[in-house]
Image 1 (spheres, rainbow, N blue to C red):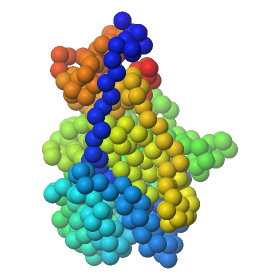
Image 2 (image 1 turned 180 degrees about the horizontal axis):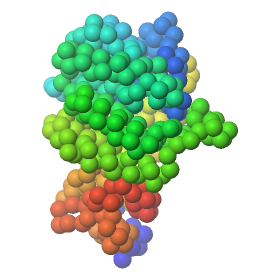
Image 3 (image 1 turned 30 degrees about the horizontal axis):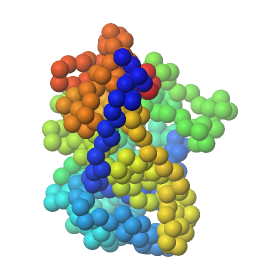
Image 4 (image 1 turned 90 degrees about the horizontal axis):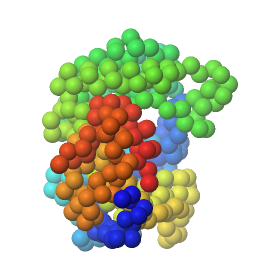
Length: 392
Protein backbone atom coordinates (compact mmCIF):
# COMPACT_ATOMS: atom_id res chain seq x y z
CA UNK A 1 0.00 0.00 0.00
CA UNK A 2 1.48 3.44 -0.98
CA UNK A 3 1.92 6.33 1.44
CA UNK A 4 -0.89 8.38 -0.09
CA UNK A 5 -3.39 5.56 0.43
CA UNK A 6 -2.43 5.26 4.08
CA UNK A 7 -2.55 8.95 4.87
CA UNK A 8 -6.05 8.79 6.29
CA UNK A 9 -5.26 5.91 8.70
CA UNK A 10 -3.56 8.10 11.25
CA UNK A 11 -1.08 10.89 11.00
CA UNK A 12 0.60 11.38 14.31
CA UNK A 13 2.70 14.52 14.18
CA UNK A 14 5.95 15.06 16.08
CA UNK A 15 5.48 16.32 19.63
CA UNK A 16 6.16 19.97 20.32
CA UNK A 17 9.75 20.06 21.52
CA UNK A 18 11.78 22.77 23.14
CA UNK A 19 14.57 24.18 20.97
CA UNK A 20 17.95 22.51 21.47
CA UNK A 21 19.91 24.83 19.21
CA UNK A 22 20.34 28.55 18.70
CA UNK A 23 21.61 29.99 15.42
CA UNK A 24 22.68 33.65 15.19
CA UNK A 25 23.38 35.16 11.78
CA UNK A 26 26.07 37.84 11.95
CA UNK A 27 26.00 39.36 8.46
CA UNK A 28 29.05 41.61 8.49
CA UNK A 29 31.89 40.95 6.04
CA UNK A 30 35.06 42.80 5.12
CA UNK A 31 34.59 41.70 1.48
CA UNK A 32 32.37 39.37 -0.56
CA UNK A 33 33.75 36.12 -1.94
CA UNK A 34 33.07 35.36 -5.58
CA UNK A 35 30.99 32.24 -4.79
CA UNK A 36 29.00 33.67 -1.86
CA UNK A 37 25.21 34.09 -1.98
CA UNK A 38 24.64 34.43 1.77
CA UNK A 39 23.00 37.48 3.32
CA UNK A 40 25.93 39.77 4.09
CA UNK A 41 26.53 43.44 4.82
CA UNK A 42 29.65 45.61 4.78
CA UNK A 43 31.40 45.73 8.12
CA UNK A 44 30.55 49.24 9.34
CA UNK A 45 31.83 49.40 12.94
CA UNK A 46 29.17 51.88 14.04
CA UNK A 47 26.37 49.49 13.02
CA UNK A 48 27.61 46.44 14.91
CA UNK A 49 26.57 47.42 18.44
CA UNK A 50 23.04 48.52 17.40
CA UNK A 51 22.74 45.26 15.47
CA UNK A 52 23.69 43.23 18.54
CA UNK A 53 21.00 45.07 20.49
CA UNK A 54 18.47 44.11 17.81
CA UNK A 55 19.49 40.48 18.16
CA UNK A 56 19.02 40.71 21.92
CA UNK A 57 15.53 42.13 21.39
CA UNK A 58 14.58 39.43 18.92
CA UNK A 59 15.90 36.75 21.27
CA UNK A 60 13.61 38.02 24.03
CA UNK A 61 10.58 37.20 21.86
CA UNK A 62 11.60 33.52 21.89
CA UNK A 63 12.50 33.27 25.56
CA UNK A 64 11.03 30.14 27.11
CA UNK A 65 11.52 28.70 30.57
CA UNK A 66 11.24 25.12 29.35
CA UNK A 67 13.93 25.27 26.68
CA UNK A 68 17.47 24.03 27.23
CA UNK A 69 19.95 25.24 24.65
CA UNK A 70 22.68 22.69 23.99
CA UNK A 71 24.39 24.49 21.10
CA UNK A 72 24.87 28.07 19.96
CA UNK A 73 26.19 28.69 16.46
CA UNK A 74 27.30 32.04 15.06
CA UNK A 75 27.29 31.97 11.27
CA UNK A 76 27.42 34.62 8.62
CA UNK A 77 28.73 36.69 7.15
CA UNK A 78 31.92 36.72 9.15
CA UNK A 79 31.13 36.51 12.89
CA UNK A 80 34.84 36.77 13.69
CA UNK A 81 34.77 40.48 12.83
CA UNK A 82 33.22 40.94 16.29
CA UNK A 83 35.60 42.19 18.93
CA UNK A 84 36.20 40.19 22.07
CA UNK A 85 34.00 42.56 24.05
CA UNK A 86 31.19 42.35 21.49
CA UNK A 87 31.34 38.55 21.58
CA UNK A 88 31.22 38.61 25.37
CA UNK A 89 28.17 40.88 25.41
CA UNK A 90 26.34 38.88 22.75
CA UNK A 91 26.83 35.53 24.47
CA UNK A 92 26.02 37.00 27.88
CA UNK A 93 22.74 38.32 26.46
CA UNK A 94 21.87 34.88 25.12
CA UNK A 95 22.63 33.25 28.46
CA UNK A 96 20.48 35.85 30.19
CA UNK A 97 17.60 35.11 27.80
CA UNK A 98 17.68 31.33 27.43
CA UNK A 99 18.39 28.49 29.83
CA UNK A 100 21.70 27.20 28.50
CA UNK A 101 22.93 23.69 29.23
CA UNK A 102 26.13 23.09 31.12
CA UNK A 103 28.80 22.18 28.62
CA UNK A 104 27.00 24.02 25.81
CA UNK A 105 28.78 23.92 22.44
CA UNK A 106 29.37 27.48 21.19
CA UNK A 107 30.68 27.67 17.62
CA UNK A 108 31.93 30.76 15.80
CA UNK A 109 32.62 30.79 12.08
CA UNK A 110 35.85 32.65 11.40
CA UNK A 111 37.88 33.93 8.48
CA UNK A 112 41.61 33.43 9.07
CA UNK A 113 42.64 37.04 8.43
CA UNK A 114 40.26 38.37 11.11
CA UNK A 115 41.90 36.39 13.91
CA UNK A 116 44.57 37.39 16.37
CA UNK A 117 45.82 35.71 19.51
CA UNK A 118 44.28 38.31 21.85
CA UNK A 119 40.89 38.11 20.14
CA UNK A 120 40.86 34.32 20.32
CA UNK A 121 41.67 34.38 24.03
CA UNK A 122 38.82 36.85 24.52
CA UNK A 123 36.44 34.60 22.57
CA UNK A 124 37.46 31.64 24.70
CA UNK A 125 36.92 33.66 27.88
CA UNK A 126 33.47 34.68 26.54
CA UNK A 127 32.48 31.02 26.34
CA UNK A 128 33.23 30.07 22.73
CA UNK A 129 34.20 26.39 22.67
CA UNK A 130 34.46 25.62 18.97
CA UNK A 131 36.01 27.54 16.08
CA UNK A 132 35.07 26.84 12.45
CA UNK A 133 37.75 28.36 10.21
CA UNK A 134 36.93 29.11 6.56
CA UNK A 135 40.20 27.94 5.03
CA UNK A 136 38.60 26.94 1.67
CA UNK A 137 41.95 26.45 -0.11
CA UNK A 138 45.60 26.33 0.86
CA UNK A 139 47.42 28.03 -1.95
CA UNK A 140 47.40 31.75 -2.54
CA UNK A 141 46.62 31.66 -6.26
CA UNK A 142 43.42 29.68 -5.70
CA UNK A 143 42.38 31.88 -2.79
CA UNK A 144 42.76 34.92 -5.04
CA UNK A 145 40.55 33.28 -7.69
CA UNK A 146 37.89 32.81 -5.00
CA UNK A 147 37.97 36.46 -4.02
CA UNK A 148 39.33 35.58 -0.58
CA UNK A 149 41.43 38.14 1.29
CA UNK A 150 43.56 35.73 3.29
CA UNK A 151 46.60 33.66 2.45
CA UNK A 152 47.51 30.06 3.17
CA UNK A 153 49.82 31.33 5.91
CA UNK A 154 46.90 33.13 7.53
CA UNK A 155 45.07 29.79 7.74
CA UNK A 156 48.02 27.90 9.18
CA UNK A 157 48.57 30.62 11.76
CA UNK A 158 44.87 30.76 12.65
CA UNK A 159 44.74 27.04 13.43
CA UNK A 160 47.90 27.31 15.53
CA UNK A 161 46.51 30.29 17.48
CA UNK A 162 43.23 28.47 18.06
CA UNK A 163 45.17 25.57 19.56
CA UNK A 164 47.12 27.93 21.77
CA UNK A 165 43.85 29.53 22.94
CA UNK A 166 42.64 26.07 24.06
CA UNK A 167 39.40 25.77 22.06
CA UNK A 168 37.77 22.40 22.61
CA UNK A 169 37.33 21.83 18.87
CA UNK A 170 38.85 23.40 15.79
CA UNK A 171 37.18 22.80 12.42
CA UNK A 172 38.31 23.80 8.93
CA UNK A 173 36.33 24.12 5.70
CA UNK A 174 37.69 23.17 2.27
CA UNK A 175 36.01 23.49 -1.14
CA UNK A 176 36.55 21.22 -4.13
CA UNK A 177 35.54 21.70 -7.76
CA UNK A 178 37.13 25.16 -7.90
CA UNK A 179 38.07 27.11 -11.04
CA UNK A 180 41.29 25.74 -12.45
CA UNK A 181 41.38 22.84 -9.99
CA UNK A 182 42.36 19.36 -11.14
CA UNK A 183 42.67 16.11 -9.22
CA UNK A 184 46.35 16.65 -8.43
CA UNK A 185 45.66 20.09 -6.99
CA UNK A 186 42.76 18.75 -4.90
CA UNK A 187 44.92 15.90 -3.57
CA UNK A 188 47.53 18.42 -2.44
CA UNK A 189 44.85 20.60 -0.82
CA UNK A 190 43.50 17.61 1.10
CA UNK A 191 46.92 16.60 2.33
CA UNK A 192 47.75 20.15 3.41
CA UNK A 193 44.39 20.53 5.15
CA UNK A 194 44.73 17.27 7.06
CA UNK A 195 48.30 18.19 7.99
CA UNK A 196 46.79 20.98 10.11
CA UNK A 197 45.22 18.17 12.20
CA UNK A 198 41.86 19.87 12.78
CA UNK A 199 39.39 18.11 15.06
CA UNK A 200 36.75 18.44 12.37
CA UNK A 201 36.78 19.05 8.64
CA UNK A 202 33.94 20.05 6.30
CA UNK A 203 34.36 19.39 2.59
CA UNK A 204 32.04 21.09 0.11
CA UNK A 205 31.71 20.90 -3.64
CA UNK A 206 31.50 24.28 -5.34
CA UNK A 207 28.01 25.32 -6.38
CA UNK A 208 27.73 28.36 -8.64
CA UNK A 209 24.80 30.25 -7.13
CA UNK A 210 22.72 32.88 -8.96
CA UNK A 211 23.74 36.53 -8.67
CA UNK A 212 27.27 35.75 -7.51
CA UNK A 213 30.47 36.88 -9.22
CA UNK A 214 31.02 33.31 -10.38
CA UNK A 215 27.53 33.25 -11.86
CA UNK A 216 28.33 36.42 -13.82
CA UNK A 217 31.58 34.86 -15.00
CA UNK A 218 29.77 31.70 -16.07
CA UNK A 219 27.26 33.68 -18.09
CA UNK A 220 30.16 35.54 -19.69
CA UNK A 221 31.77 32.16 -20.40
CA UNK A 222 34.90 33.12 -18.45
CA UNK A 223 34.48 30.55 -15.67
CA UNK A 224 35.92 27.06 -16.10
CA UNK A 225 35.20 24.57 -13.32
CA UNK A 226 35.54 20.77 -13.09
CA UNK A 227 32.68 18.70 -14.47
CA UNK A 228 30.16 16.93 -12.24
CA UNK A 229 31.99 13.65 -12.78
CA UNK A 230 35.30 15.23 -11.83
CA UNK A 231 33.73 16.70 -8.69
CA UNK A 232 32.37 13.26 -7.81
CA UNK A 233 35.86 11.79 -8.14
CA UNK A 234 37.24 14.57 -5.90
CA UNK A 235 34.59 13.88 -3.30
CA UNK A 236 35.29 10.14 -3.36
CA UNK A 237 39.00 10.82 -2.90
CA UNK A 238 38.21 13.16 0.01
CA UNK A 239 36.23 10.42 1.77
CA UNK A 240 39.01 7.85 1.37
CA UNK A 241 41.74 10.28 2.39
CA UNK A 242 39.93 11.51 5.49
CA UNK A 243 39.07 7.98 6.60
CA UNK A 244 42.69 6.90 6.12
CA UNK A 245 43.76 9.83 8.30
CA UNK A 246 41.57 8.57 11.15
CA UNK A 247 38.52 10.79 10.77
CA UNK A 248 34.98 9.46 11.01
CA UNK A 249 32.70 10.31 8.09
CA UNK A 250 29.59 11.03 10.12
CA UNK A 251 27.61 13.31 7.77
CA UNK A 252 27.67 13.75 4.00
CA UNK A 253 30.02 16.76 4.09
CA UNK A 254 31.52 16.32 7.56
CA UNK A 255 34.39 14.37 9.10
CA UNK A 256 35.47 14.39 12.73
CA UNK A 257 37.89 12.93 15.20
CA UNK A 258 36.03 10.87 17.82
CA UNK A 259 33.91 13.12 20.04
CA UNK A 260 34.28 16.21 17.83
CA UNK A 261 31.13 15.95 15.72
CA UNK A 262 29.29 19.27 15.35
CA UNK A 263 26.52 19.13 17.93
CA UNK A 264 24.72 22.04 16.30
CA UNK A 265 24.65 20.53 12.82
CA UNK A 266 23.49 17.22 14.23
CA UNK A 267 20.49 19.12 15.61
CA UNK A 268 19.56 19.95 12.02
CA UNK A 269 20.04 16.41 10.72
CA UNK A 270 18.00 14.96 13.60
CA UNK A 271 15.15 17.30 12.59
CA UNK A 272 15.11 18.81 16.09
CA UNK A 273 13.89 22.28 17.01
CA UNK A 274 16.14 25.34 16.98
CA UNK A 275 15.81 29.11 17.08
CA UNK A 276 17.21 31.37 14.36
CA UNK A 277 18.10 34.99 15.08
CA UNK A 278 19.36 37.72 12.77
CA UNK A 279 18.79 38.66 9.11
CA UNK A 280 18.02 35.66 6.83
CA UNK A 281 18.21 33.30 9.82
CA UNK A 282 15.98 30.23 9.73
CA UNK A 283 14.38 28.48 12.68
CA UNK A 284 12.29 25.40 13.35
CA UNK A 285 9.82 25.40 16.25
CA UNK A 286 6.87 23.09 16.92
CA UNK A 287 6.96 21.82 13.33
CA UNK A 288 7.00 25.37 11.92
CA UNK A 289 9.90 26.46 9.75
CA UNK A 290 10.49 30.18 9.42
CA UNK A 291 12.92 32.58 7.77
CA UNK A 292 13.74 36.15 8.71
CA UNK A 293 13.95 39.13 6.40
CA UNK A 294 17.25 39.12 4.50
CA UNK A 295 18.51 42.71 4.71
CA UNK A 296 20.41 43.81 7.81
CA UNK A 297 18.84 47.27 8.06
CA UNK A 298 15.38 45.88 7.28
CA UNK A 299 15.87 43.33 10.04
CA UNK A 300 16.95 45.95 12.56
CA UNK A 301 14.10 48.28 11.61
CA UNK A 302 11.50 45.55 12.09
CA UNK A 303 12.86 44.29 15.40
CA UNK A 304 13.48 47.71 16.87
CA UNK A 305 9.90 48.70 16.02
CA UNK A 306 8.64 45.67 17.94
CA UNK A 307 7.62 43.79 14.79
CA UNK A 308 8.50 40.23 13.84
CA UNK A 309 11.49 39.71 11.56
CA UNK A 310 9.84 36.61 10.06
CA UNK A 311 8.84 36.94 6.40
CA UNK A 312 8.38 33.27 5.44
CA UNK A 313 6.96 30.33 7.35
CA UNK A 314 5.67 26.86 6.67
CA UNK A 315 4.31 24.07 8.85
CA UNK A 316 4.79 20.61 7.42
CA UNK A 317 2.31 17.90 8.36
CA UNK A 318 1.60 14.30 7.43
CA UNK A 319 3.80 12.61 4.88
CA UNK A 320 5.63 15.87 4.11
CA UNK A 321 6.85 16.17 7.70
CA UNK A 322 7.88 12.53 7.77
CA UNK A 323 9.75 12.84 4.47
CA UNK A 324 11.68 15.78 5.88
CA UNK A 325 12.73 13.71 8.90
CA UNK A 326 13.83 10.90 6.60
CA UNK A 327 15.85 13.02 4.20
CA UNK A 328 17.54 15.08 6.90
CA UNK A 329 18.38 11.92 8.82
CA UNK A 330 19.87 10.26 5.78
CA UNK A 331 22.53 12.96 5.67
CA UNK A 332 24.04 11.20 8.68
CA UNK A 333 26.13 8.20 7.75
CA UNK A 334 24.39 6.26 10.52
CA UNK A 335 21.07 7.02 8.85
CA UNK A 336 17.65 6.97 10.50
CA UNK A 337 16.90 4.53 13.31
CA UNK A 338 13.58 2.83 12.77
CA UNK A 339 12.70 2.87 16.48
CA UNK A 340 13.36 6.63 16.66
CA UNK A 341 11.07 7.19 13.69
CA UNK A 342 8.36 5.01 15.21
CA UNK A 343 8.67 6.78 18.56
CA UNK A 344 8.22 10.14 16.85
CA UNK A 345 5.41 9.30 14.46
CA UNK A 346 3.81 6.09 15.69
CA UNK A 347 4.52 4.50 12.30
CA UNK A 348 7.12 2.27 10.71
CA UNK A 349 9.33 3.97 8.17
CA UNK A 350 8.87 1.10 5.70
CA UNK A 351 5.09 1.49 5.82
CA UNK A 352 5.53 5.14 4.85
CA UNK A 353 8.34 4.91 2.29
CA UNK A 354 8.76 1.25 1.39
CA UNK A 355 7.46 1.72 -2.15
CA UNK A 356 10.01 4.43 -2.96
CA UNK A 357 12.86 2.89 -0.96
CA UNK A 358 12.69 -0.53 -2.63
CA UNK A 359 14.09 0.51 -6.05
CA UNK A 360 16.76 2.63 -4.33
CA UNK A 361 17.77 -0.39 -2.27
CA UNK A 362 17.80 -2.56 -5.40
CA UNK A 363 20.05 0.03 -7.07
CA UNK A 364 22.52 -0.19 -4.20
CA UNK A 365 21.85 3.35 -2.95
CA UNK A 366 20.09 2.53 0.34
CA UNK A 367 20.63 -0.17 2.93
CA UNK A 368 17.66 -1.20 5.03
CA UNK A 369 18.10 -3.31 8.16
CA UNK A 370 15.91 -4.20 11.11
CA UNK A 371 17.44 -1.29 13.01
CA UNK A 372 17.91 1.51 10.46
CA UNK A 373 17.91 2.86 6.95
CA UNK A 374 21.03 4.55 5.63
CA UNK A 375 22.83 5.51 2.47
CA UNK A 376 25.40 3.13 1.02
CA UNK A 377 28.76 4.43 -0.15
CA UNK A 378 27.28 4.77 -3.64
CA UNK A 379 24.21 6.45 -2.15
CA UNK A 380 26.39 9.00 -0.40
CA UNK A 381 28.04 9.88 -3.71
CA UNK A 382 24.60 10.21 -5.37
CA UNK A 383 22.72 11.60 -2.37
CA UNK A 384 20.99 14.40 -4.26
CA UNK A 385 19.46 11.87 -6.64
CA UNK A 386 18.31 9.74 -3.69
CA UNK A 387 16.64 12.68 -1.97
CA UNK A 388 14.80 13.75 -5.11
CA UNK A 389 13.41 10.25 -5.56
CA UNK A 390 12.28 10.10 -1.93
CA UNK A 391 10.20 13.29 -2.18
CA UNK A 392 6.49 12.54 -1.67
